[in-house]
Length: 120
Image 1 (tube, rainbow, N blue to C red):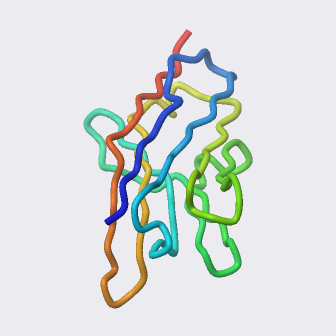
Image 2 (image 1 turned 180 degrees about the vertical axis):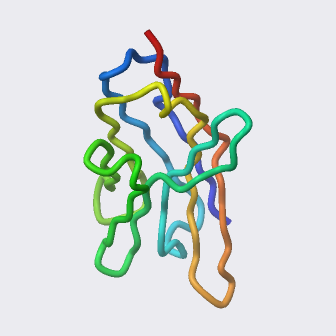
């Protein structure tokens, strides 16, 4: 089992920056990928950014490329961050941290979410 706790959500003005944190605990050695998703009211949850264990490959949604960066605190999965810059009102959503384990189990774990609101 893996437990995830997000933090860092806040109200921020357009053009501002914010850093989200995801603290993982439990069987973190089983994780092979972690990512950030978001869900705005009335919309489906979408992938924002992800980082995989093999080679540390990072993937980003087109809407956040060049503005958001996902990175780990160290070589473990203890803490994963999402650095967000040049925030826009359309970035307003609940942001969720996700962790995945490889086959054959392919488990997926979620945090409780943290609210990001971009508004003047």
